[in-house]
Image (tube, rainbow, N blue to C red):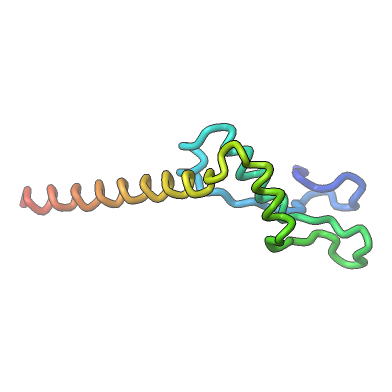
Length: 109
């Protein structure tokens, strides 16, 4: 099965880039936040047509990227903080629920 591979490359199967996302985050955010996450992560990818070996590159954040991100997200400039806080809260609630469940089990004995 061939996914995400640039057309014209002599690879039958494979990936050029793989983005790993947190499922709890993904399942609990809006479609617009999903677009923002994917857009942000894809901005780290670069195809170097002049490269002789591996043209697939990853880019770090840059000042120009910072300004572009601010402009792209001017309607919700703190979206990353909001999504991160939501995800952290979900993990914390699950942790507290596990602790409470253990406490109840211990009291039963």
